[in-house]
Image: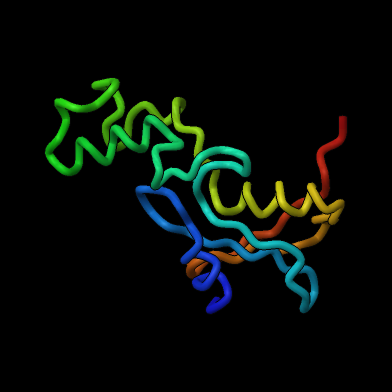
Length: 119
């Protein structure tokens, strides 16, 4: 779990920071953290308008928000950030790494990655 916590430190989301490690057998095959996808400006730098607005709301600067619906717990469909697990899966896919039978670990939880979906 200490590796997942180390990966978590790379998270650039303005909300919660999460790190994920994908393990197959005794090997780490991918890692990821929550935040904007590769190629987007980092969340901390304004890459996600919804997260930037939510941060303004939390800090008492709601009058500067671009959309009044971007409050904590709402407008999540407008957020471009991806979950740590999603980022780890995307990274594995980018490098052609199969996730069949792998386990994701983050925080105190673990979950199995099932077989790829049939088309």
